[in-house]
Image 1 (tube, rainbow, N blue to C red):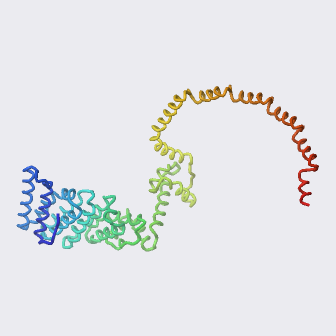
Image 2: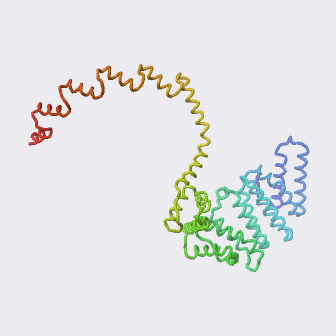
Image 3: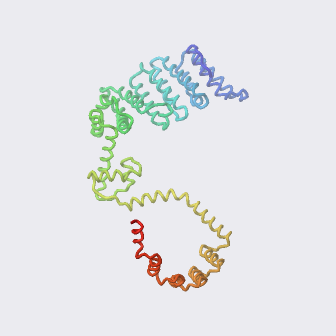
Length: 414
């Protein structure tokens, strides 16, 4: 679908024509029934636009919005969504809220590859609702935040950074008026989630949350009084998110130790409570013990067992490979005609004509005419005419005419 500059009514009809083409699948050989449904849809939309019944037109197109997102190009999806947003701005005050809510629900209905186009249209819908009630604006903005959170890859796809998300959430929370108790209660869980995200996220350091009416309302709730104090400490005293997170984890570890009393704590419990990787558990325990926050000692054997269980799980998949290796070893032994490792050793010795390692040594000595290791040494000395190692040394010195091995060097040096 190619959109050109046209009147508003023409753009609405172009959307209807595009949907009709999608209904037929672009195939002229489709059945008469399908073609009739597409033609009926187009005729109804044309009539509704001509009668300025845009609320019914929007409802009609929304019935096929998922078809549009699944079959159209990115550009077409964005254009059609924005035309529908523009159509809501043409509605009378009494009909606009229902159509806006319906379009918002349709845009956030599904998590798919069109997440960027869906969120973009949703933000445009919020931006065009300035004349609507605060309650409706708040609902739209919370829908934007909720949809952005639901999609795990949306921050990358839509280039929505943590700071931009915080700004969006702050704008939503700012819509609540202090005198509107119902709005304050509705915003409270979103306010808590926003504060927690700000504190825990290492990439956000500035925010405008503290002065919002909903935050002041939250500070009066004993359940969240501590959370709000922590937020104020970070914002006023300049404590970084990393420092706050370090303190929070130490407090969590202290609390966990108090709950356990004199019972043992597993590494898995500490890992879960502190929300840290398994390989960092011992580091945090050492820090806490070294700071004298807790007393105790690390049971290395228990820790080793926990690690061993993980290793066993990882090794389970290798059992089949080990079995194959054993079967391969058996095949090799069969190929060589060796019954076993011991049998193979016997075969080698038999091949060499040696009954055993000891008998082989005896055969070598007999071949050399030496009765034993000591006898061999004696024979060597006798052959050389030297009675012993010491006498051999004396003979060498006598032959050289020197009294000791060191003295000839001294003479040479002089």
